[in-house]
Image 1 (tube, rainbow, N blue to C red):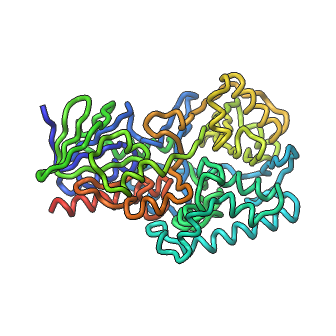
Image 2: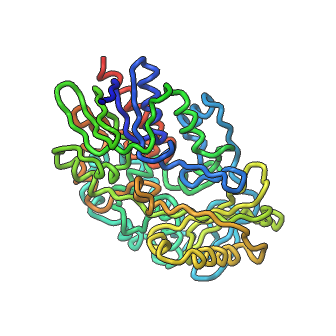
Image 3: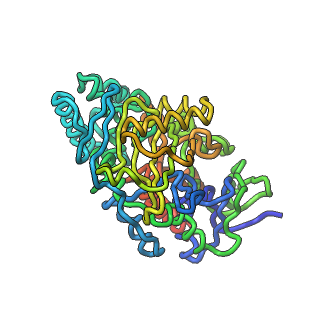
Amino acid sequence: MTLGADVVVVGAGVSGLVAADTVHRAGRSVIVLEARDRVGGRTWTTSAWGAPHDLGGQWLGPSQERARAWCATLGLPLFPTWTAGANALEIDGARATFYGSIPKTSWLALAEVELALRRIDRMAARVSWADPLAHPDAAALDATSVASLRDRWLRTRAGRALLDVALGAVFGAEARDMSALFLLAYVGGCGGLRRLVETEGGAQQDRFVGGAQGLALALAARLPAGAIRLSCPARMVNQDGAGVVVTTDDGPVRAQRLVLALPPAARARIDLGVLPAAAQQLTQRMPMGNAVKVFARFPTPWWRDRGLSGSGVSDVGPACFVIDDSPADASHGALLGFVTGDQARRWGRAPEAERHAAFAAQLTRLLGDGPAPDAYLEQDWGADPWSGGGPVALGPTGALHAVEGARFAALGRVHTAGTEAAYAWSGYIEGALRAGERVGAEVVAALE
């Protein structure tokens, strides 16, 4: 039996659900196909410890207007990320503490990093994420790795290490994994690199009281009963004069229009037929970053009583960045570490006990002797079969030229959503919402 609707959406993450909600509110029928057994995509909240902890995306910044508007509409309260106290720094095995967003290391390294951040943000302001190839130096920038820029601009090892930590936390990647054009376009679309790495006033300022997956759950609840089909991956898409047919393990689904709300690499799992060269390159040339989120639980957030924020940066690892992830009511303490890039690729090969011991040892180095963690959680997004990594798709050298025109364009009756398809705040919940709203409106207009 063939199911049918005006629109079928593949992917029940935030972006796909917003697109579906837009279609539904316009009076059109919609079916959402989701390969996982849950909605949320790269947002996923667990309550394994009796309180919500986000295994995926989790923060909102003050300038992320659409996400905040949706939270107000859906009644999802936020609370500020804990920042009171001193932050910890570990570079070359030496520990220090500092206040504010810029770690205190040698004056030369600090000067280098400050100048590099200003230079990146100044250059990024002139590169469009929607059309990066319009920049007059696009060819040279796309042929240059971020590692090459880093080594050209930063002479001290500490300065380079601090920039690498920032890149790991934002992209789940090493500097060599991205082109300079990709970096500049990406951070320009988010208002600058400084905004992305800061907590107060930055992208990590606020958290969801009930966890970020609550956004997807609330959006899903607005759709008609039966509109979302879980554990139902799309396998093949065929277009004809009447519409599209999506083949699934449960049978075909016919619609007039299709929305693909997936990261670029995930689209390669679906047979989309013969594609233009740039669209094929999109699935091949923009891989996901590598990120593991590791949580350590404590009876209380004991570091707060010692005047520490729980935040720390490290070039030693395994986590490049640690932050206080305790619930809003501080019913227990939790520290979250981001293991990224090369460290993340090695992480899954180590035994679980060894992984947890390494993280506990790092917390002791950063925060001093304290109670031992009484439990751990971790989510390796590189091992996730449907995302294939995280937090966002990357643009290696040459990639943006190879995929010219394909990142946002429709392929006949197939439209592109997902956070990577946002014109601003790509890689964030904000970007996912913006892309979903844009594509939802685009599809509704196409149906008229």
